[in-house]
Length: 211
Image (cartoon, rainbow, N blue to C red; front, side):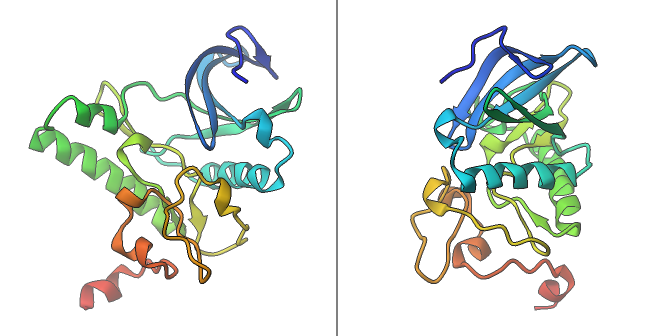
């Protein structure tokens, strides 16, 4: 059920809906204490009793909180109020890269600026053992000043640490290639060959370059 404008979720006041997907609904909200706009990602009511989805939300919060980079959207915290659980995140203005692509061909110099910032964000995450696993134009925002922000590490998986289980049947971006031997998470159209083949990621660039 959509949350109406003016509703308060803890200290945050909902301003308007931004969008919705399988992982939850996203709202533009206002933080009156700090006087700033935020984005709030709310899990749908139907999932409130789903332990797997709740664990995924918790994992996303921990992953995002561990990343501090100018090209990665920040997370400010977790909020629970009235049976609603939500992530409070940095509000990033501007169109997604998917929106920008729809406008027409991107000039080479602009494409290079965008690509460099995406690469910087991913290099930073990879150095900390984190892979996005659902990188696509819809998960990248391009602000008016050309600053790029990578969004939604909800499918990210730390290469080391707690191997939290995932209920693949509820993933909005699960590929149709899931098998009994393993699962592939991500959006099929944007999977790398390494991701589609299914083995664990190995971020060992020097050894790869030697081949």
